[in-house]
Image (cartoon, rainbow, N blue to C red):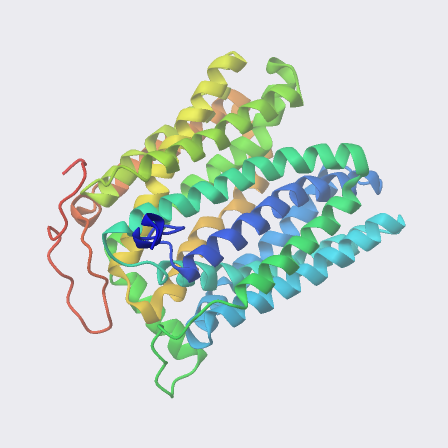
Length: 433
C-alpha cells in the first residue's frame, strides 16, 4: 500500500460549510451578480425608451411598493411551506418577468407601464423570496462557527454586488441593456435550479391548524416581545431611508457639481462595496462577545458619507470614507445575522426575517419622495447634515435598550419552548465584552 493511500483526505470545504450552505452561497452569488447589473440596465432601458429621470424613479418605485406590501405575507408563507419551494417559485417569477422585460427592450417596443408592471412582478417575487432565503440560511449552520459562515456568505454576496455592478455597466455600454436583462433572467433560472436541491428535512413539520392571520399574529408577538429586535429594526428603518436618499438623490448631484461627474461617484460607490468585502473578511476572524453592541457601534460611521457630501470633501477623502463605512456596516450585518440565528426559534425564522426586511425598506420610498422638498426647504447641505444627524440620533437611541448592549454570543440554537442558554457558553475570540 502506498503512503498516500493511508493519508486521510483533506476535506474540500470546511465542516461548517454543509451542502445547504454551499448551495445557498453559490446561488446567491449568481443572482446577486445578475441583479446588480440589471439595476443599471433597467435605468438605461427606461432612458433609451425616451423616459427621463422621473420615469426611472417610477420604475424603481414599482419594485419597492409590492416588496413592502407582500413581505409579511411572504414570511408567513415561508414558515408554512417548504422554504426551498417558495424560493424556487419566486426565482421562477423573477426569471419570467426579467425575460419579458428583456424581450420588450430588445424589440424596441418597451412602454413605461409595461416596464413598471414587470418590475412590480420582480418586487413581488423578492417579497416572497427574501424571508424564505434568510430563514433557510439561518437554519443551515450550527454552533460556534455560525458567525464565520455568515461572514463568508456576506463576503460572497458583496463581492458579487461589486462585480455585478461593474460588469453590468460595461455590458450595457457594449451590448445594450436588453441583453443584460436577459442575462439576469438566465441567472435566476440557474440559481432557482440550484435551490431546488436544498434539503429541508431538518426543519420541523408545522402542526396542522391555524391560518395566515394566526401566523402573522404569532410572528408579531415574537417580534414585539424582543426589545433588541424591534429596536434595531426601527433604527434601520430610519437609517436606511435617509442613507438611501443621500446616496440615490444627493450623491449624484454633489458629484455633478463638485466632484467631476458620474465617474468619481461610481468610484466612491465601488470603494463602499470593497469596504463591505473587507468588513466581511474581518468578521470571519473576529467574534465580538457582545454581538449587538459591537454591531451597533459599527453603524455610527454610516453618517459619514452624508457628512462628507455636505462639506463636500475631495474624491480621495470620500472614497476613504466610503470604504470605512462599508467595512463597519458589515460588522453590524454579520453580528445581526448571528443574533437572529441564536435567538429566534427555527419555525419562526422567516416571519422574523420578513419584519426585518419590512423595516429596512418601508420608509425608503417616502424618504426618496421627500428628498427634493427637503433640499428646497433646507438646502442640499442642510439636508445632508440632517441625514447624518438622524443616523447618529437613532443609533445612539437604540443603545439605550439594555438588551442591545448586553446580548452575548453563545453556541446553542434556540428551539421552540426552550429557554436561552447562558450567554457565556462560548469563549470568544475577542470582543467588546
